[in-house]
Length: 173
Image 1 (cartoon, helix red, strand yellow):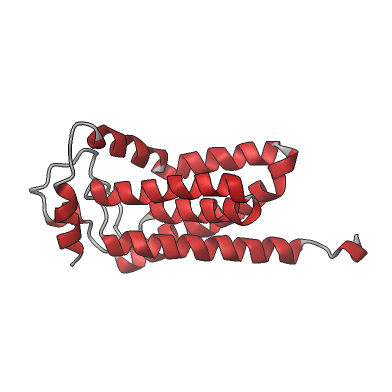
Image 2 (cartoon, helix red, strand yellow):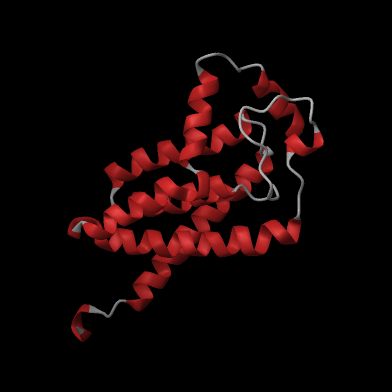
């Protein structure tokens, strides 16, 4: 079923979507857009607490996805299995499961949404676009992206629990 979805998406390719999806996907490379947003939030007093929680969520995501799950599962990417599909991006060298782009995007976006709804909606839209771009570009299976989204939610939740656990109750300050 994973390949059926990926092959269906190949029919969407056109001169407008191709560069757009490459650009959107590149925003998630190494989580740079989310790291940059975290840095900006850490500087701005109104968003500082959110920035701290985003940093925690992204660190949890890095550990869980890149250091634990990818090497443990060692799932080949669709572009490694079916080399007939012409890629619009360089073939990634790390394993496919879970999608790190999706996990980092949702770890950060869900965190922003939990703390700042309006800004969070924009972050979630971007996270969805980044996740979709990985399928469009034939570098992840749908189950990789779905797992990345779930892991992102988990990391955001855990970051919130960790941050709240580290905070002293108002009466103890």
